[in-house]
Image 1 (cartoon, one colour):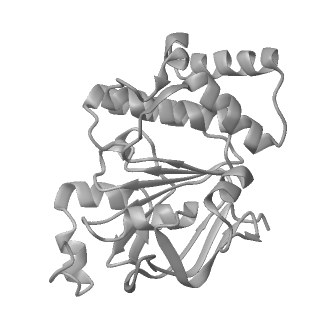
Image 2 (cartoon, helix red, strand yellow; image 1 turned 45 degrees about the vertical axis):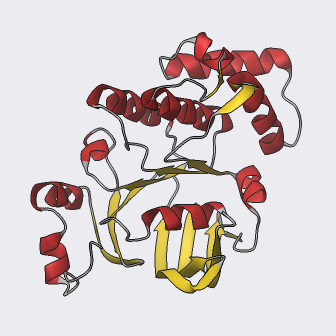
Amino acid sequence: MTEPILRLKGLKASIADKPEIQILHGIDLEIAPGEIHAVMGPNGSGKSTMASTIAGSPTYVVDEGQVFLKGEDITAAAADERARKGVFLSFQYPTPIPGVTMVNLLREALKARRGDEMPAREFLEELRATLGRLKMSEEMARRYVNEGFSGGEKKRAEILQMGMLKPDLAILDETDSGLDVDALRTVAEGVNALKTSDMGILIITHYERILNYITPDRVHILVKGKIVKSGDASLAKEIEANGYDPILKELGLLEGATA
């Protein structure tokens, strides 16, 4: 049996500086190699907390449960260690880094991921090939990270990093946030161009629209820090057509669930 790329076992997590506020209340999830899973849910349901906790953000602490990456327990691993092991998180709001070019960021990130420095010629060949697959110009790689970027450019820059780092697990936290239709399609096409049979992808989203371009193998509904329903891609279509209320009502979770 193939080992899952990601396995969450009874994951409970709280805010680090407010341990009395528990946000995740016992999440079980498995993502196999080559699978795309989408986690959807109302505002405040814990979706971004889940993404950040998997990536090892110090903002949250694990109260109970475990996080496994390819069978290895990484629950206690720091964020940088998880990144080196193959966990990639695309941020909802990418931060500008003045004075640091995309090329330099990618070289340093690759060095940390590989454990050694990629020869310059090999790096440039890989960079140009990845830019080509994503239909991006080389000028993007020469710019300072996210400085003066439009919303769409920031998200495309995140996908470029994903393409160069070749993670085992790619977590896309509301990558569709703030994008117009054309930018959304471009970003989604980039994800589709980069996915492989060895990679697991977890898409965190509030809306179904990105799933019009990236077809998930499984869709999970997160409410109040728990997965309350799972299904195939048709579940996302159901939410797009009817909203979350019918599902929440069916499960007896309607009151206060969208707070």
